Amino acid sequence: MNITYAVLLITAIVIVAALAGYAWHLTRKVKAMQQRAQEEQARAELQLRERQQTLLQDIRFIARSVLEEQCEITEGVLRLGYLINALDPVAWELDELSAVRRHHELTSSMPILDAYKNLTRKEQFRLDKERFALEEEHKPSIERELRWLVTYHFPAVTLLQ
Image 1 (cartoon, rainbow, N blue to C red):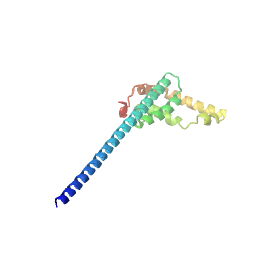
Image 2: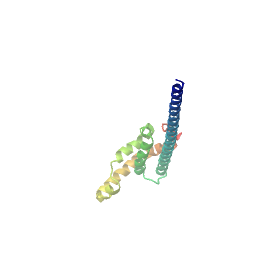
Image 3: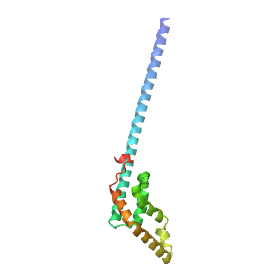
Image 4: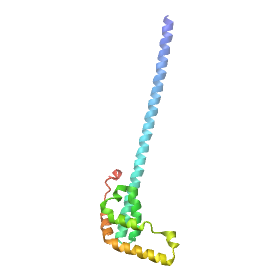
C-alpha cells in the first residue's frame, strides 16, 4: 500500500505542479495582453491628442486669416464649419458662433471649384454678387465671433487640457 500511496502522491504533485505552471503561463499571457492594450490605448490617445491639436491650430489659423483679410469670409466660414465639427460638434452650436453658422448655412450650397467653373459667366457674376452681399452683411458679427473663436479653448475636448 505504501507504494500505491507514494505513486498517487507523486502523481498528485506532478498534476498540481503542471496546473500551477499552466496557471503561471496564463497569468503572464494575460499581463502581456493587458500591457499591449495599455500601450495601444496610450498610442491612440496620443494620436487623438495630436489630431485635436492640429484641428485647433487650423481653426485658429483660418479665423486669423479671415480677420486679417488673407482669406475670404465665405471660404473661411466653410472651412471652419468642417474643422469645428470635426473637433467639437457641440461648439459649432454655441450662441457665440451664430453669425458664422448662419453664413455657413446660406453659402454651403453654393457651387465651388469645378462646379463653379462650369457655370456661365452670368451665373458666376450673380453668385459672386450674392456671396459678396452676404459677406458684407455678416462681416461685423462674423469678425467679432472669429475674435472670440481665436481664444476659445474648447473645454469639452478633454485631451486638449
